[in-house]
Image 1 (cartoon, rainbow, N blue to C red):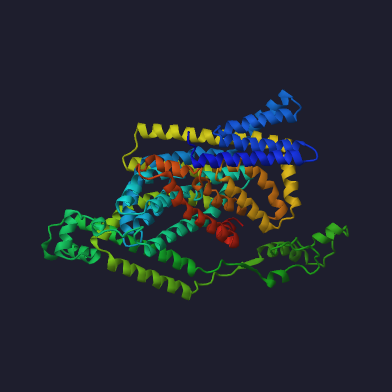
Image 2 (spheres, rainbow, N blue to C red):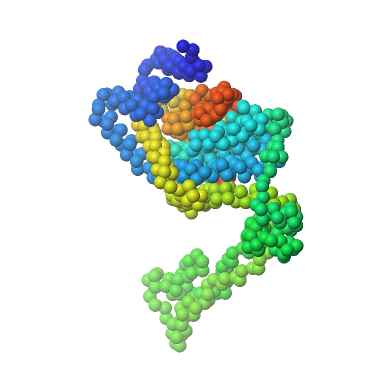
Length: 640
């Protein structure tokens, strides 16, 4: 029987791992418990590569080696297993996982992706490689709304791949675009992977979401830039859209307005509203079309007004201490004045010192008695009247002028065909964006915890499905079943990881790894490069879930020794883990696409299409490392 190349690669990699462990054990002067921990780690990796379930492999290996570490004490082994499982069950962060997954499956079944892809495709028709660019845009938006890689790749494989191949696109480019775009859900919030990393590394999921926002946009932007450049340099790989493909049919009433008055939307609708040339078009219809047409203008006016208010806002009034209030204090008093102008009553210091009552001259009793009342009535602080608003800066007016010019250009080019595309975007793109902004905005700005925001997202998914008349018992049943399946997988992985990590630490494997790494005298840069290379290589045979739950507990304790921020390390890992779905031979995105692609699309073509996008991921990691503020600026602004 002929063995496929990827199987040879997997067997070779397993052989290298086992030979390395055997060499380590043979060359070691003394076999310690730490060496047993490394043996357990290597056996787990090999067993997973052979196809054993990850969670139960972790639990089984962990229990066997814990039993050996406890000198075959079964009671202590079972106690450790129960404590590890209970620790996972009491982790509040994990509650958000089933809610986010449920939101994703509901949005997927609301059939929004087809409308979204069609509207984006028409909106970007004049961009080089418009089909591929629209596919990446759709994948980015849909991955943000769902975070389910397999669902996005499968749906885009059914929807976009046939159209791209029919339009003459290269098979490898088409496959690479769909698989790379579908994997953006690993990084772009609300990502389940970031929740798993946060729970494993003890990093705030809120800060991870804020930090991953700009790197995710950067990676998607690099993908789109690559496609545009390729389409511009080699048009035969991504032919431009034909005139028939850009054609948008108009509704009969709109067509009548266009034929009678003009094809420019705004002037024609204003003319139709005045009743020019006795059009047989209802006024209510014209008003509805005009309202949709004026939405960008209304949005611009609201944003400009809020921006002007913020740009001209006066500084808050500051209460200033007045010396006159201090002069009213009895000079004979030695009382200490409190911060903010509050003072002790006159004469209290004399009483405290034990010197007795002061002898007052005749007739001064009334004056002394009225002094505290007068002092109390004298204001210690006088608020200054708030200054008037200051003029807006030149930058504000320049930005306003640029925005106004763009708006004028938009209306100058707005034909009725573009108005129909805009309406399609309103019906498909903007509802998803509202849902995404409601979920991510409430998390990033501290209005809700990730769990509460996930609940809002799940409710929003239900509303979207109901609004598009896709909500029925079958959809809810499938979504609940898939959510339970995915959540159970993640939770069992956490239980297995907890047992495995406890066994690894008990055997001293973590200490042995730490001594080995520190003994290399690495700099911070060298450590980060080494760790990312290891994660990149691990992405070939393993999935991101296995890499995080098995290897992150080994890397995280080393970060303090090199002064690495766990948040920044998590962003690098998140970018790197994109390779777990794009790296052969276990590139799951390739198998998802192959399952729905035409027979003539081979697995090797899909793998070759992935390679340029893997290179772009490496470029993104280098950019993030050299400019950490890409990921750290937003968390620092919001939470520091």
